[in-house]
Length: 457
View (cartoon, rainbow, N blue to C red):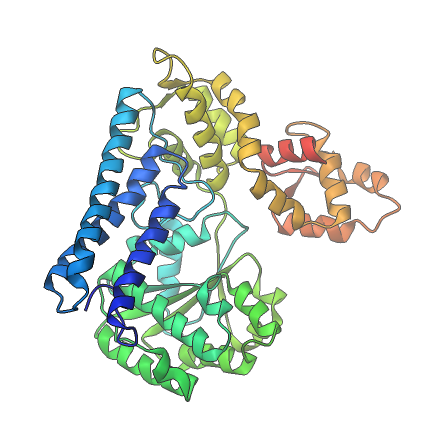
């Protein structure tokens, strides 16, 4: 069989589906904003095409000889494009930007930094004989999905990560059969990608008549394949699955009962869910997942943020003056997304400068990059805006107007909003980590976020 081939497809469909997947991957790669990241993402696509060419050469599929030259041509086109990107960067003496904006970091991307403390905490809980479920909790764009994609690097080899993105196919399925099929598919792909472990297949047809019973029988086979290892089932964006249950696409007892049964009766499995809400905010989950252990993910440690700025990858050619690094830390508070956003715009700004001054970033360069960073991150800031009610936005605008590092006293806040029930909004802003209490007052946690609200409220 060719890569990704399933027995339910016709011979020509198998090949065409492979080409379609490669086409979609290439389309996504070309959307990367920097030459460096385009090259980084295109390289494994070349490797997939090479594997496809070899598979077509070995295949007894009667259509294989027709498609082998096409696969070779695609491979050559992409390989030549990678070479062209590399030569163009070298010729123009540009700085390659390794920063990844707006999408989670994958195993292939070298820029994943730190989080060792969180990995250690997760490992400690996984070793607990009581096997409590875990909640990885943090605000949006704090790096939850990037951590899950890379968690295999931080955990012992005996723990097999099985990452499932609930924002994708599982939660958008029409029924339980589709949900379980896509759940198993992502588990299989993740185990193969992260640990080179081949799990037994599970077809949609197998699930059709009695989905949950047949899925449970498939889990028996998975446990056999694990041998002496254990599995960490990681369900990212659990809120999306909750929404699908609320809409009636899946039965609550079937889905959450299955998870509870897996936690209680399958010692080889550990379950981790990830999201930007607490279990208490989703009561139905709290009643099924007992004794959930919360692992918080927030700002990077300062040393981790410094590494992300100064040495994100080997042989990074941009150097920083010390006050430039300090300014980035002040502006971002080591927020992983905002550090990358600002640094990416800084690289773009430096690439417009004369080569004689291009490779040294100064304090003034950082300040000059701020307006472009605020524009480039508009979706991130708008998402924050949408999480807050009208009163909360008024409070944020009021605090933002007072300037950088300003602390607005509780008395001043009470006076300003005396005709409004503002305390519940204050609690929400504190929970969302937008503001914090300082010296009996309130201030923004992150200066870049304050800047955006100052300009847009």
